[in-house]
Length: 305
Image 1 (cartoon, helix red, strand yellow):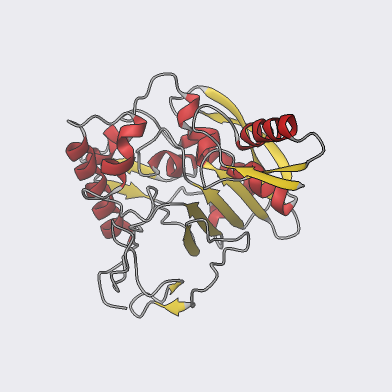
Image 2 (cartoon, rainbow, N blue to C red):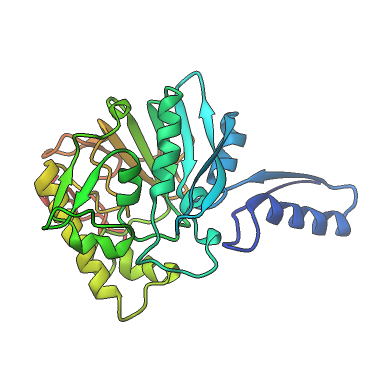
């Protein structure tokens, strides 16, 4: 008998490989002559880099970056020299398993930006980032700060870090952004289709696992909406309704949701359709709403596709 054990990680408890090896141990205890193969599996959260390094044969690049609450953490990402591709996960630099006490109002994605900056120095132009398992609800401003973007309040002061900073943002400056970002392409891997804001949005649905209380949900959600509005006005770009981070600097971006996404970023059985209003190529007939159903409208403008 041959068994393949591919188990997703148990958040904060076991890694994918630890879970798989536990299954292997149990199978061999019952049938000692069984052939058991353990492979990593991930959904965009913890273990995503390990799964992709295993699947793509990438080189593991160790880095030291700022953790979600500012402490230094050691992490790594995968690097594919031939295609100049970096494979990363937010969880390794800003993960919920890196904090002993959750503090979403202060937790930052700055370390994620530091990882990206390191990969840019190595010549990376293509990025695949899993965004699950983070301790943050900052809309990616920490990440953007690490890449040279600046966020100011109405008095010209730096807004600070974390979700608490979002409502203060009135001005976004891009003059000092990392020049190596030019021409980069990002693929964002996640297993959900929630919009950025609203009762089915990122803060209401995922905020509690990061420490957002029931009383804070509305306030943080409105702050996120304010941030998205300022971004749209200041940078003439859109914040995707299907991710918790805004990436206004890339020349091309795509969000892959669900386990139907393969290592090439394709989803079987879906046609490549073009959004009529923004030109984005989509793999569904329309953008997804908070319930994961097709609305037939583009999330960048609300127009029908």
